[in-house]
Length: 325
Ligand code: TXA
Ligand code: MG
Image (cartoon, rainbow, N blue to C red; front, side, top):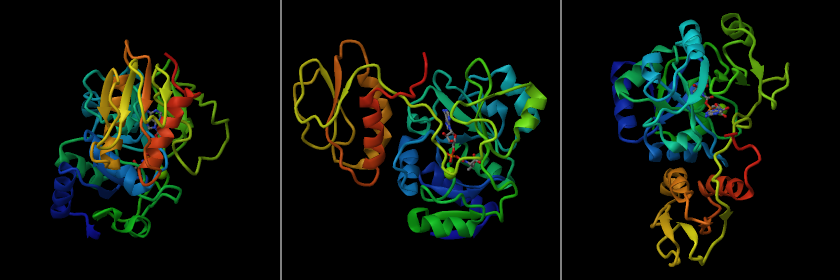
């Protein structure tokens, strides 16, 4: 792992790493982010692996401006007014994914919405511009640890799990961005953050607070508790070592059972990062008419397997927080 002062040369090197599917820690005005190519399922899987997250929480995709955001999300008037006031800056919008949006499914945890923001930090902007693609980035710390606001914090927390840290000095805002859901009828605050509720309401009028977040509650220490989860319409059966003829099989490893109506293999070689990268796309591909049930082979409870199994268990339980409609 190396820490490089952010300048033209190090940003170019970092952008090349991102284009090759690697991870780079970089400064934003809120906190340091652990960035990967938001359109590359494998790179996004590597982010979860480096963070050691036991769950796949949807991540924020970072773009330069509203024009770029419109390539990936269904824009609307509220987003337009808010972007005029707050972008670039610490305000994240949750908006419906456009048809043909190339944001990785793993970056949105399989949801039909995308969290997107344009950071104001010049190094973050230079990196997005040089990489030529949106950057998915949660805070650059191991899961459960506090968010880093200096390059040295990132190094302490992630060590060699990240190969390059761009040092842009301390973050000026110091808390994560505000997350505002603009995908429903009423703008809803999902996470308080760098843009205040008062400032947002001054632009668009009263906003709703998420049920999970009563008025006045302090920001949560761990993000990702408030989001909905993708859940397939078909029942899910875990731990399958044999299959029925009406089942679709989500396989793992070199020797899947035969006889399923349709089979997708998360990773024929048993690689968990590959499995994570394929998880949501393959679950969706199996969740279709004609298939009675989705059978899933056992996945080891190690490394990314924890997050994969967490998501599979929610899918099997019929997730209570699944989105409406
Ligand atoms: O300031 C920040 O936002 C930092 C810097 C690096 O930009 N990033 C950050 O990302 O805090 P992360 O992944 O730690 O937090 C993303 C938040 C989570 O609370 C997640 O639940 C929410 O955004 N989120 C992301 N996508 C969502 C979606 N489609 N629907 C609802 N919530 C979503
Ligand atoms: Mg975080």
